[in-house]
Image (cartoon, rainbow, N blue to C red; front, side, top):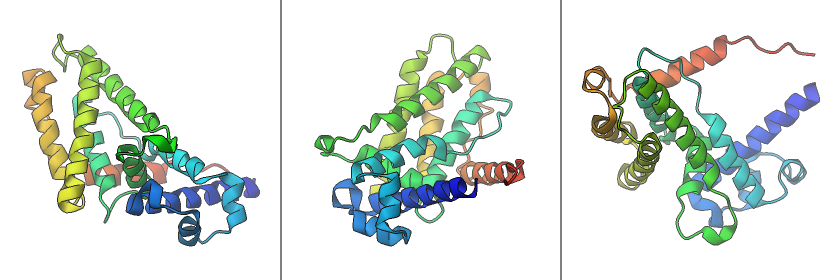
Length: 228
């Protein structure tokens, strides 16, 4: 059991180091030697888990799906959707965020790299499905207007978020990310939310860090598996 736990920690350390390098220089410029240097691990340890840089990148992309902490469902499903977006915006900041999230987002949105063989659809598809699921629950609860195309709405929200994070990265290095996402969701929600629900939604940028702190508290309070 201890050996298995070490293997999990080693794999995680490699993915974090790779994500940091991918975030800083992109996939093409990233090297195995720099990732090894960043991780402090041996070449043998890295190649035990990942056979190539491409496998490392796919591992980072896949890990993004699990990188977002779970949030407790509140009274409004649309508020949960807002809070998830603000949480992701918080995790994308370089000073406070999560390297796995930043690295995977850099890999996902890199332009002119279609020939590198990476499948960038995994995190985007998962994000659209999660958003659509939230919207379906919200519509069933009477929070979303009945005529709204939920598949199209989910694609629009995810696509707009992707564009906003690119703009924020260019303009401020994502320092204003939560503010831009708050503005985006305040604007987009007017197209789908029932008026009585819309006025109850809180788009405060600070909800991102509050959601993160709550998720960390929930994680730390959860029972830990017994050691063997």
